[in-house]
Image 1 (cartoon, helix red, strand yellow):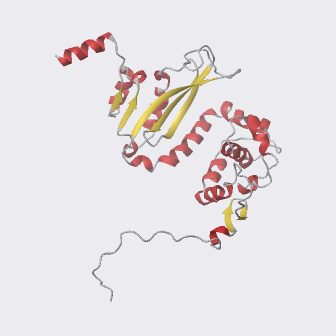
Image 2 (cartoon, rainbow, N blue to C red):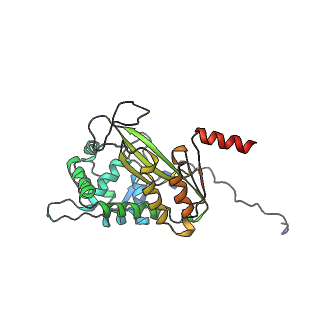
Amino acid sequence: MENKNSPKAPHPEGELYLSDSSPVNQPFCTETLGGRYQVSWDEDSATTPLGQLAFFAEFLKASGLFCSLHETAPFHRTSPNAPKNVDVIGSLVLSILSGHCRYAHANGLRFDGVAPKLLGMSRVLSEDSLRRGMQHLSTTHVKATQQWIGGHLAACTKDLLELEWVLDIDSSIKPIYGKGEGADISYNPHKKGRPSHVYHSYFVAHARLLLDTELQRGSDHSAKHGLPGLFTLLDGMSTEQLPKMIRGDCAYGSEATMLQCEQRKLDYLFRLRSTKKVKNLLSELEH
């Protein structure tokens, strides 16, 4: 007879062993932006970069993220032969998911007959079409493009930022090989004497979740050039989303940075350069 007062396990039993006849090994359907697709596993085939795209496409349809991304893109074309927004944004998404880092790499996807349909696209665009599309955004509609990208980034983190979190700020130097717009010969610890770009980044500490980043000329590597973007990001947050503290290295330990933090009533933790005045102050505090 079972004892009703006996303690119950706080967690259910683990999953049972799945045999070869389990439904997991059988074909199943996924709902994507291009319709319903049947997915099956082939243990003898080699792994491909886009082998899991069917499941990611199902997530994009269920969340509505991809449709929102290309429907709100600030493209303003008048030519009837211009590519659709979904083809431009979709080609970039597929190229990024494949690990590409140049426009020319996207040409390797142009003859893929499955991947574009999963995202509801008609085709993968050439590198020239992608380059012209991005140039159109970066030169003609700069402010609208920044609001478009910034809005989608903020939507991904707005609920998470209501918890207590710490904001880390930092800058990274990227050497440029060849001729690039804004590539200046300046501070470059990796390749001295070579042109570079600088990334001013703002992200959630420990989680390493990027909130925003700014690409600037190589000569704008000092911390002061990243402060306008930092405080624009903070001013766009609600009171509940503001960080518990802002952290940075000695490059941000300046009077201007600390003054702006204090005006917004934000706690901060910055390293200080070991200058003569700082050493004298520390010695006075010790005595």
